[in-house]
Length: 376
Image 1 (cartoon, rainbow, N blue to C red):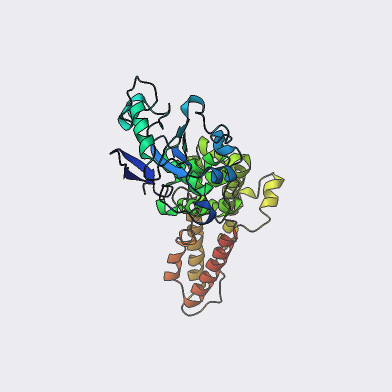
Image 2 (cartoon, helix red, strand yellow):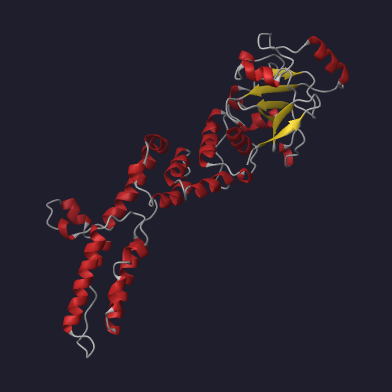
C-alpha cells in the first residue's frame, strides 16, 4: 500500500502527502500535538509532525536535523532546513522546501515559480501576496529533507510515534531498511509487542535467512528463535555475505550449530563407530535418529500366516528402506512424513502382529525426530 496520497493545493500544484502524517490527521493521545514541522522524503512525499514528539523520542535530535529552538528560525546548512513564514494547515508550504537532494529539473517541475538557474528564494510579489492573505497569528513551520524514500521513512515515523504499520504491508526489504534507519535518527528499537516484529516473522516463512538476519541485527532474540525454525527449510549454502554480516558472529554461530546439530542427530552411526576420534565416539553415545532407524521391528513367534522366512523378508525390506533414508539428501528441516515414507510399503505385506511391531518402531523414530532441537 502506498503510504502517500495525491493532494491538490489551492495554488493548483499536486503534491504527495503522507496518509498517516498529514495536516488533518488526528493522532491518538499526546502524539497529536500541533504540526510545526514538514519532512520531505527523497521521492517528494511530505510528512507533517510535531518537533516536541520527535525530540522526545530521539536521542540525537532526530539525526541532528532538529537543532535548538534558537536556531530554528535560520536556514540550516546546505539548505536542508527551511522556515515557512506562512505555511497553512490546508496545504504544504512548497515555496522554499526544495533542497540540494533534488535535481534542478525536479525543482523546476515541482516549484514553477523557480527557474533552475535562479536563487532558491520565492518571488517577492508572491511572498507579499501570501503575507497579506494569511492570518498574522500563524506560526512558521520548519521544513527538513531526509534521504530515505517515503516507504522506508514511513516505517521510521510509525515506530517513532508507536503506531501500527501493518496496514501498509511493507515488504521485507522496506521493513529491514526502516529498522536500520532507527539508529540514524536516534529512535530506540521497538519492544517485542510492536507489530513490526509480527510482520518480520510473517516474512520469515518465505525469506527465512533475511528475516533472521534482520532480527539478529537488532538483537531481538525472541524473534530470532521462531524465525530460525523456518531457516531449516533452506540450505546454509545460500547464505550471502550481506546476511552473514547483519547476523553478526554470535547469531551466525548459533544458526550454524542448529543446522549442523540436526544433521549430526540424524547421521548414520555405523561407519563412524570404527573412527579413532574419541569426540565422535562420545557423540554417538546418545541415541540418534539413524541409530533408532537401523534397528528392525521386533519379531514374533511363527504363526500360520507369518513364518520365520516372511519375517526375515520384512527385516530385509526394512534394511533396504534404511539404506534409502541414509543415502537420500535429507534437509535439516525435513518433515516426519518425508522421513518415514520409505517404510510405509512394509505394512502392505505384513501380518497384523508385524504391522503392530512396525508401527511401534515408526512411533519411536517419530519421537526421536521430534526431540531434536529445531530452534537456536
